[in-house]
Image (tube, rainbow, N blue to C red):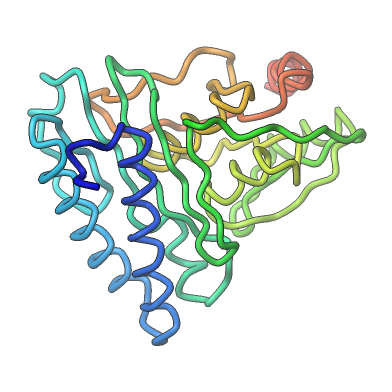
Length: 243
């Protein structure tokens, strides 16, 4: 089927799948993440520029074009989320393809190629049951003191993992209940994961409870909470008390 006839979610998935397959081949050849970033970015841009020529694009691997601030529809992509994990031949890296409309993460696809899965906002993933005590995903290389304090307050089991996409999808897949991040991110790190997580019925916000707003002039989004809804207020209150 021509890309012109794909829905936004179908397009996001097709792009993420193809970029993921490309990255698997590159990883199997023993190449580093720099090549993966470059070639996956070229593939994604070619897809989007052909299929959605009127939309703007914000990619980690391309210069930021301020024209995006004048557009309602902006594709926000991370061709290889978890470059370090990719280069270390680990499985916890991902491909992010998202569409933000009027600043809202409306459509997303997150491929985790080494796990053989791509999760999308439509059809929405079915959220498995949760567990008590909760499992909290934290950075594998830069765990924050706040995350440690919040985890201790709520009695969470900490699970270290690589990329933001891999962690967010672990919550969607029922492998954890909470993903709390305070180490600094950019819009491309979490737009696609947030779109998928919201579609699955998860809570997504900044750690003060405020909404995540995309296509802002500054690309930075310093903190993030993705969790099962039954844990959202507990975690947000714990963050406030730890602060």
